Length: 214
Ligand code: B12
Image (cartoon, rainbow, N blue to C red; front, side, top):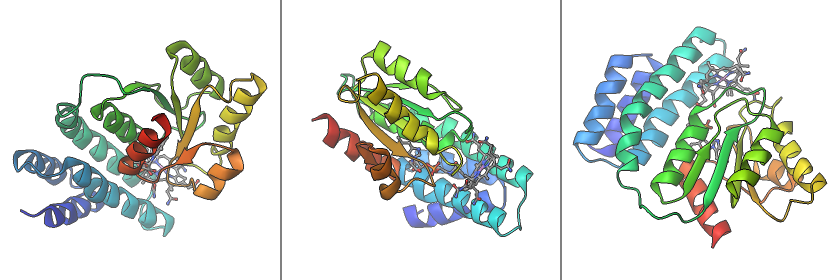
């Protein structure tokens, strides 16, 4: 089965909230040695975006959003270990990543963290709904190079700016590179915050981190 075909089928299974089919396709992608990053982003990611659109249009409600998110998470649990196996053993740099306070969307942040770790970075994933202070304290404690902050709600994006503001207050702004992400985040918001970069996908997040760390 080609990558495009499987991605289309996965996206369709997600929109149909067909967990069995989605899991079956995830396993198939592994056994056929397909590009799993592509499968995660263009198959599962696309399906979730479509669920979000249907929710916007009033076709789907919160339970559907939740089921879609859960299917994605179950599929990731199967796919992620196979990504990690390809990882390198030395650390290219330390990254502390979290979803900001008030926001429980964790899927995209987890993908970015796992992909970075599969690419040789030492990643500390603090989870979701994490206060700005806590993110900074962890970054100090772990002596991180990069702080990654995810936000999916327009109402929580302000927390991303707060991370930068606190760093400035503490005279620590130069110590860390701060990168932002999440469905609602744009380059222009990143500039407004004074962050060091933004990436709309996990692949681009890896390139961004590589370019900031070298
Ligand atoms: C699944 C989902 C949920 C699940 C989350 C499950 C979980 N554990 O994460 C549940 C059901 C819990 C949920 C709840 C809610 N949700 Co919701 N949810 C979604 C949905 C459908 C998909 C999100 C997702 O996982 N996408 C797949 C991942 C792979 O994509 P991603 O997160 O964008 O991440 C990629 C990039 O952005 C980037 N990236 C992400 N993070 C980072 C970080 C860094 C540092 C970098 C560099 C890159 C990066 O790389 C990732 C990989 O490619 C979106 C729709 C959408 N279009 O996004 C709505 C959406 C985000 N939700 C929305 C809303 C409104 C809510 C609720 C408020 C609903 C409610 N009334 O209760 C609650 C929020 C509760 C809270 N306090 O947080 C809205 C937000 C609108 C807005 N602009 O504010 C959206 C956009 C739906 C819509 N179209 O309206 N949701």
